[in-house]
Length: 556
Image (spheres, helix red, strand yellow):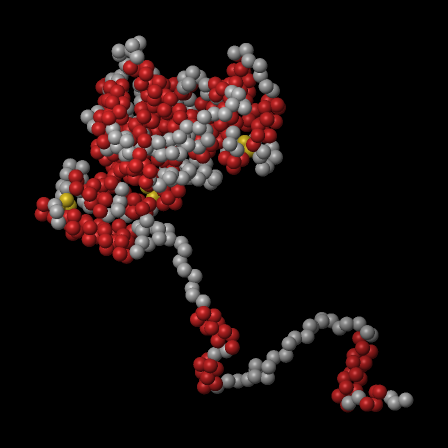
């Protein structure tokens, strides 16, 4: 038998002897510190290169660099996808609008445009017609008149094109003169005032200048109520794009009946809001206190909810009045009435959620619900109604909402639930709570449609019914001859108040009659409405985290 160890080479025999010696010294145990084997570097790794060698290697490039260059040559870069000021339109559109304006200016005397000419100029630029007043003011015009030269307008047009690419950004640039990327309430005043002055559906209101300020305040308050989802008092570009403001302004061009524009500009809606405020303001001090608001809808609201409304939970600005002496302005009343009559609106859900969230932690706890339900129980017992214990009511509400966090109700839970009006009315509005209880759950409610074909909201339905009742009361045989009016002395004493009401409120009845006659004589604009784009519903899935804005209530 041949010994295999004798056939090994000298190197193998030497390595085997070295391994035996190491094992003998360590006693068969691993040596410490243990160092893992590493990959050997190529022989050229430690080579010292001359500058000439380095240049040759750099010019040739490594294999990895060559692979990267190959990828770049076969793949195009990622195109730009974020446009804060809107996606830039084709250049030929700017040139076409510029040539159209130049041709239009040549038809004016001395190639100078007056304020009346800016309706045609706005259309030539592709703007809505009711941008004409902000456009005129941006060119250097003023309310008293003045002319604008072609050179002045072309300079402004170049700034508009560079400052904004889409309709929302250009609107913000025009109304702020390029100073901000957001709109304050006073920035919208010139446009809304121009609607009052020139829209054919408000021609009966032209002579009643004392009501112009009220209409402007109402429209702007409604715009911020629907569009300003952050409650900051500043309309950003994103909020304008998501809202229906731009569509509503364009609808003003398409119809001569302003009541068909139910978003923001309807005169009937303004009439209902204004009359509701006038009925509550008994002492005519231009503000509403707790006692005045308690009479709303036959004392339907609980006193605890009224205290929360006046505590500043849903109002902006600092409160300078002492506790118990707080007052509500007309602008704040617009927000209250819209939230009270349409609790399905996202802003209304946030409005009442803030009022019920006593500790401001972003959740409605069982203690907060019990706090508001206690008064409801007392009021039901006072009128002899059979009451439901709080524990049973709580089980019903939790089964209806199905909150994500057990035992806590968040704002998101209320926005996802379609029965949020029932939830809110259960805890602070007794009259509407009784309406829900007496309503047949299996009865189907008829779905009414707005003039544009969309389903009417709860607010649109309420405003239409209230307007018919108000007009019927004022035109009936038993209508009172003398209406309560604001005195001239009170108007003089309150000149510095931000919500100055009209001293001739009784003229609203005459104006309402004139407006009804005007509506009967107006032509139907069904063809124009058919061409309009469908209004998309306001996206209410966003939960605003801003619980207390710091901006003051606005005034003009």
